[in-house]
Image (tube, rainbow, N blue to C red; front, side, top):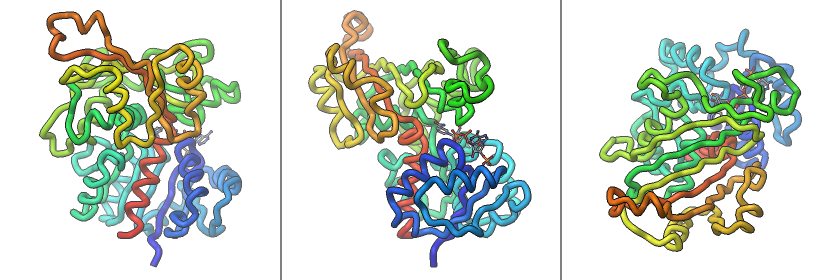
Length: 354
Ligand SMILES: NC(=O)c1ccc[n+]([C@@H]2O[C@H](COP(=O)([O-])OP(=O)(O)OC[C@H]3O[C@@H](n4cnc5c(N)ncnc54)[C@H](OP(=O)(O)O)[C@@H]3O)[C@@H](O)[C@H]2O)c1
């Protein structure tokens, strides 16, 4: 019998990106029996009808009035946001709902019972966790997922990174549909300051952990390490400074990276491509950078670009850094794809045979 899956949040940006994957993979889609939940079922129906997917017309529900229907599902897939999660996850626990909860929101990422979902990095761990009866699976922060996929060969199987610093340039769609609408002048101001012709060097609320740190920045260390080493034998030292920029889609990151051993830029470029089919390494020339290393080159694709790879020659000269050479690189990826929807889509593929 098909597993029943309740999809909450399909009309949002991450939800629609997932629907686009299902549209390309009708076999996966047809492996589940779907129901859809929204606070605005009319808007949801309109969105769903624009996708070439076959739906049972009786499977659309209004979240405000029909939420009890959620508990009939074997899997709840939510891309609705943390408000939904904070409201309905406690309810699921209260009624001892025993299904799998798959979520894009940040609310439960650091919950002790949750596994962060990034199959190219931790697919085996996810399979093991399912076999152990784990039920709570959460997509990681968008910049974290993009960063780990971009640098995967430097982290797995061995961690070659001594520390790294990421300065982010995050698209407005990272803040949902209303962020995009502001930049397109189709909706009211969504960000705390106007985003058009501007940048905002503060994303999310202040962190409670340290003065001056934002929650978005806190996630880089916490979530990257939870994905890489769920049993905490090792630590990747990572810090970030996160900035919102007036780009519609794709997050970019300027990364400063201290490696544990000295390798040539040529070897570093080669290493970054190893077993990493999603990465395009762009030679560090003016021509190639202009041609192939801007957000417009990666929006609506599953590829990540990595370029501007060079040794930080002046910093590396310092006697403190002699044994640990420092490099710069710049990476770009569509945060709605590998940063949000694609890991959930890959996880659903793992669930099908179970
Ligand atoms: N955007 C990203 O790049 C990204 C990356 C990683 C993780 N996430 C996380 O994923 C979750 C969903 O993000 P999102 O970007 O999909 O947010 P979103 O576009 O704002 O959609 C989330 C929900 O907001 C409601 N909504 C309100 N106004 C809307 C409008 N004008 N258009 C569409 N939906 C509207 C919808 O719920 P109802 O239908 O129930 O009203 C929708 O499902 C969040 O928790 C976010 O933190 C997002």
